[in-house]
Length: 478
Image (tube, rainbow, N blue to C red):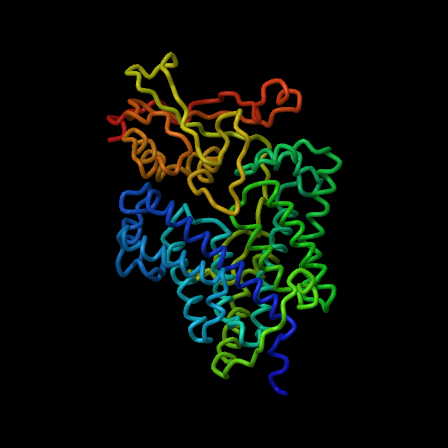
């Protein structure tokens, strides 16, 4: 049979798992946009999307919002993404005819691409491109009554390979702490947004930290090749990826990076493996029409051509991480933590209603939802959700340039008690009237020792280092 090589009947369960979980991640991403895009990028946001659209042409930033943008129109499209993602999660999209299933997955990809391409600094994260690339490939997987196309599953594994192998290479080439196995002496404490177990991970014995780094190198530099091996080796490789990503999910908050990497790993598992945990009977499947097969082959050939750029990047001496080589975010290069910070700094924003903004004033702290602030507060579990303002605050602590385009507008919004911005925060210390002055200060943070935690109950110990933004009033931000 000439098309026998094209089909993967032993992977219909893998396809189903990938589609259901990818739908859930789309739902999460669009819900994130519903909650956060307009305060950050709306008509009156910190970096307004309409202003960006006026300066960036369609070729620079392909987006349906070039046709029209308003906050209300954005909300309509974002809520469509939530509902379509929910339908995919529940398997409703899989019950549609082939053309209709492809149409739903295509609109999800086009809409999220439209958001990412105008999202500016708030959407400049590797997991955005990762979701877009995986979402694009999902368009061609076919619904439940079709036989899974093997080339699309191979492309999903090629995507997983680039995620893992690229991350492994950037670590070896970057910070020497990855090579001498000491990176985890610091990482759990200095990562962008620690989770509830991060402090426990940080205080593990240093010998175990070295074993963790060594295991990470094996998982990211050796295991990805085994994903393409015959079964059961590919199943074993997929399980290793899932276990290590679950470990990372427990140790910190990295939005949906770990979750989507786990989703991709399921593409390597055959029915025999997944049947142990999903005891369901096989559906009646049939080959897809010739037009679909031709489309899959064209997409496969296109992805092979586009892969030249990430392969060149991985093999080159000056490897970069999380880079899109085209505006469609296809065939990207990935990686994380090529450098590890040794010391944690946090930007803490405070306000006062006192007319004199000196140190004797009653300064009250704004509490963010995820990032460290109050030393007595245990770091929360946020992932796979993404708190964009909290993440950018971490980058601001590394370099003030990250906040150059929006920090002044943030402080001005706080001086107005802007409800849209305050909804992004956990606590507003001025519920009755806005502050007269606000300021931002830099603190050094470290996890409390076991003895310190027993004595005070604090999760963090912090020390004021410097002023980040001196006290400002509405007059100063006009």
